[in-house]
Length: 617
Image 1: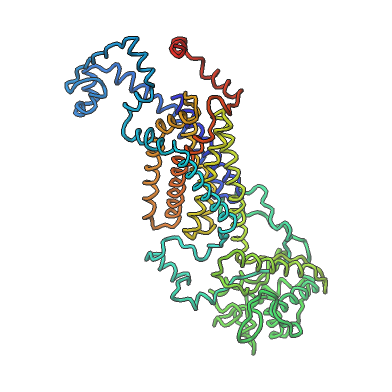
Image 2: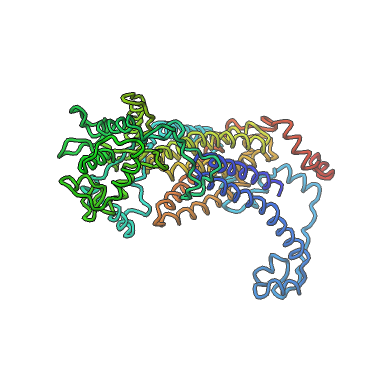
């Protein structure tokens, strides 16, 4: 228990810290997942070292050592022939008294010690334990073999680090990433519904990204989210309060100023071309912009009124235009906000919502707090690479800044926004989490290993192995042609916690070994923990394989991450870590952190006198 307790403390500490690092991300759904997972791991550890340990003691004390025949029959029933041997009773429930082995003479005892304990232990080992004790250890005793293993894994690590730094694509998967696997009938139906099916690529290509220019909102600090709950998705009261600029958007100069920006978007100012990045209509050679002030000006002209409107009457006139369903005149089909035939600006009820999202105003009494106009952008909606999407956003942001600096006829603050801005912000937050989270997890793993093993040498070499696992995983990442989408970024922050488990068990067993040489320590470590490490890896690999058949992409991807991280972790812990420990690992008390070692010995208590005398003899 004392040995397993410390090993489990190491794995629990590193895994919990890896999960908790994701709790610091700016995305509530990721931080919630990290906090939840960390608590699950922590409570699992607490229950194992308390409830499970107590259950084992109760089992051994009251169900094995003190179990008589009647109790055995009651507890075991028809399974008595199977479990009776373990309990020390026969199939009738009668206690079996084993004969004590004959006592060894002092000469025999001395002879066995001279022959060495290793030969005796090897004879008692199971065949799978002998694989580690004899075969794997025998292979690594060759200096050439160890050097070859370290060079091979070192080259793989270097390749992985290079690929991680240069070859991993930062890609926006918000459009092409599907919820279900490609070819799934339900997914194909969803593709038809949303217009993303490849069979209708012409229809899909007509869709464009959209950009907005917003007046009346502070571009430097648009939303005050103080006191809001970021997890309360969709609730209006938790969306925050807009930080208004307080500018008078109903003034005559403000109307003319915003109309000028609308004309720039469309490209109708003195024959100038549309603004940069604005999509151009092939028939009219004008920018595909949306500006209600242009339509409103046309409407006023059609009904015999002038633009700009008196500030006190602007909201009233706009409301009348929006609610006029029976407007008439030679230009009614293009000047009406809507009409019974659906031939107005918004072309019926379905288009009304689209038009209002593209351009409109927000009024508070007779004043207007916010006005927004927009345009289709030249970037295709299925463009994925952030290297293409982000520059376009930078150009649009530059456009908003230039408009904010215009003073003719009045200066107004302008905030830019695009349909991909939210996703760009999400991806940046996720990438920041990966860039900061993975190195931080490695540092925390080094710290936890150092504290729990009380040996900086062992902790350092174990951390090198964990770093190698992460580096090699990026080789798989590139071979599988994965990209840093939302799921990938989230799972990457958790991989250090999964990569640490196996090498930690071997490192802990090495550190606790009573052997005096690094070769002997590593042999005892592999013999004692090799089977457990291999069994744990096989069970985890088997569980992750079950996720390969999942139709949900997120589960399939999660299973793939677990499988390859565990596979690389197993290979590094079974070959590289023993090789480097047998070559340059600490022997005896080398690398011990003195005060921690003394503290642990004091907490665990001094050894019994009998044991001390036996050791001396």
